[in-house]
Image (cartoon, rainbow, N blue to C red; front, top):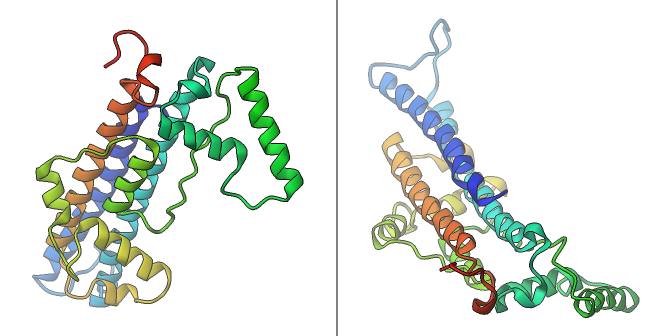
Length: 249
């Protein structure tokens, strides 16, 4: 995904979550006047069913966090391959390290013969000064994305994640279990995924207003993360200063 597609992608996905929370709000409002029902149905929405619906917000938010980080990193990888105009020596130190990691497969267990093969291929690219072609930044992190993990991967790949004080305070403010919004979303998602908590227990004592606060905090944070990646790419900060196009800041 290119930088131009990052924010539209995010806005579309985040709007889906907001729409879902609006639906939960209507159900909660209906419950205040009696047992909520789906229009035309004789079957009421039980308290347990309501909690299951609430718990799903944590899954949706975590999926958005993971998808946003993945697409931001993909955009950086694509920028390094753009038009076959950049070579490995053009990349800044952090991204150069990621290129070596990707091409030489340094993080993968290989037989001595295959290890040699990967190194020879990398040397061939360097000796012949070939442009960067296929280049995938592998970050892992499945099930473990929160604000600290995002900041850490930003430092690893050379992209500073500069979050405003207002948004950082919002995302760090403890909501439940002394956890901020992103850490809470990660914890609840993992607990549900691993079966250590039921969907009913996950949303015990939680109302729509709290879900909306959590969602807004996560959304504000991710928007600024996207802005950091877009600025980093458009300013060619992924390249060494001497190799950035003239006029790039």
